Length: 396
Ligand SMILES: Cc1cc2nc3c(=O)[nH]c(=O)nc-3n(C[C@H](O)[C@H](O)[C@H](O)COP(=O)(O)OP(=O)(O)OC[C@H]3O[C@@H](n4cnc5c(N)ncnc54)[C@H](O)[C@@H]3O)c2cc1C
Image (cartoon, rainbow, N blue to C red; front, top):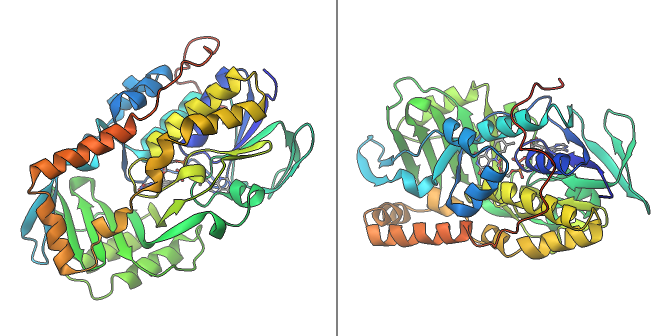
């Protein structure tokens, strides 16, 4: 295989999943991550249907994913006095397997850390393509040259900005923000509950005490790496809210684990430009759509497999990855979870709640999402050498 030195930007889900496959195909893989360490946290993510299961099994991690799963849970919609209005069944938000995002990231890191080079606390500052490679400069590290560069750095991808152009050209803001905090509000109910006011929502995941917020907003200007500033934005968005919101906001403001982002969608015509290619949310992200992690895992399998099948020829491999994958990823072009989670009026909140009393409607929605999750004919790519890697001691 040619083109065997690969730089991946982003160590969350897509990056380490691709690193896993490329290393097994004989590549030398470096992963650069802007955060100082692997980022924990995030909502539970789900895997469903035979496509996801097949890829997880081929990576040799299906059993471990099952072992670490949290299981789905019902969520009760409540009013300002805490009275139940309707119940959203766990199967609606979860899949066949529900597992913490941070647990999937940790598992993929464990399977790759000993055989790939992880560089934390750094970021690419420029990419210059030559006939034989890509010259890369970094914020902190010395410049290096790689055969290929992969942007697996999320919906606000740095690689996409450097290689394709500014974020505004590719990311559409969908009118809402969401935030997650590992926050125990005193006396939090044991079950998962969700409270709505027009254009804003707060949910507590029972005794896991994760607070989850979705609110409608104009586009905000803020520093994505400054969580204190983001906590202040959140507090402002929930001023005057009823139920237990003031105490939950106070707990979130002191939470060590905190994550806030816009609900946005990536719209890009091609995933690759020369020797640079995008994977996961950087290429087809739709925040809170519920598909991001499955798309990242399956996308990594297809991208690595097509590259290997093309003997490392990036022109052929990248083109086939896109041809194979674009249809599957079209789910990310649809839907906006914002108005569903934080309906704009009391009437819409009632309508949303009523929906969960109609089992036929619910079943047909679940059937649709299952179909999207399996809407690809997964190829059998060249078998990598050796057996799937088990956990191995990290290089540090
Ligand atoms: C901490 C965290 C919490 C999340 N919580 C949720 C959630 O609750 N709900 C939800 O729907 N999705 C969440 N996501 C996104 C979710 O993980 C993705 O939708 C999906 O799993 C696809 O993963 P990805 O690897 O493509 O992108 P992401 O998971 O977004 O990962 C991108 C990675 O790139 C890194 N990165 C960003 N900029 C740079 C840079 N300049 N240089 C190097 N690395 C960079 C990020 O730190 C991150 O580790 C979360 C992501 C993270 C990182």
